[in-house]
Length: 373
Image 1 (tube, rainbow, N blue to C red):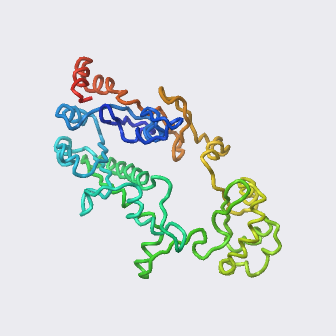
Image 2: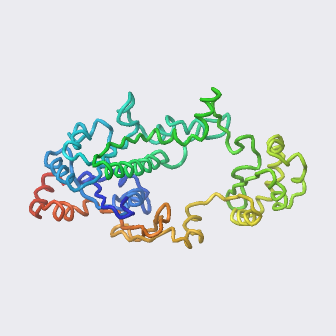
Image 3: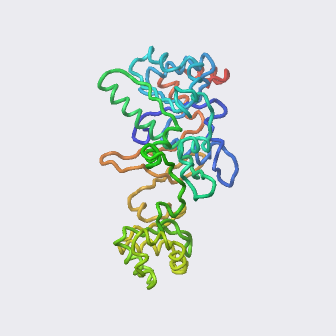
């Protein structure tokens, strides 16, 4: 929302800030809350203020800000906002048109609503871990906070829908987003398979769905994604690799390749190890084969295709310096992404509390001495 031009005020705890400030990564592995790569990446273009909502004065300031806001987004456990006297029912009484989006581990209702979780728990309980990994081995977690980022996307879409509803009816809504439920929505056909047949989707590893010559393979400088399909494209794979044995009719269809997977791998691997991932990718694509390569962060930042599309933007942060960020997840016509640096802790206290709410400098000094801001 902020990078599309909305005025977003991020509230952080005085003296400590958002927890992501203390997670890194940091330059030279030296902890510095204003240089956390995670915080900087997630908070571009927001205004940052400090406010302790547990203090009566902090709560009152929050309620003053409510008069300005269209949306309140919070990601506490469900009990927290109610304990502060800032739950949706209370805020709705003060402002019926308000949209409030709550993002929590298991949602605002249900027997698990107050349970705690980390990414590995959510990945497991959401079901995606059950189908990820090699057959006969333990389930695997992905290397990123997929559940939380996906829930953030759901929160964005749900908030926009609620604003659309408000514009048509004048009434706000409470948008309830459960992080664990996001993963259950991207299980491909695992849930429908069980519903239809009573059988569980199995972990299939890189030879999923009975396929061979399909998935990541080692090559000269990393890994390349080989996609041997559809069947009518198999002759092009044999031509690409210049391996006569690949033209054997037993490899012509998916069933045959699956039945002879080990032999097929043994034939392809020497050729793959003689060529680089980028070379293989481009040669295959020239022949209409949907190969890819496993790109590292270095590869992505140096990819001329993304550079030509102006996918990256340089942003200067007063403490962390100049960094590159993805400019946006899509390219809308007529809208320019607004990428400003993430706020330092309490950077916009005077702008928000002074210019927006009318507090004087003396008021802010007193509130800071009280630990409210």
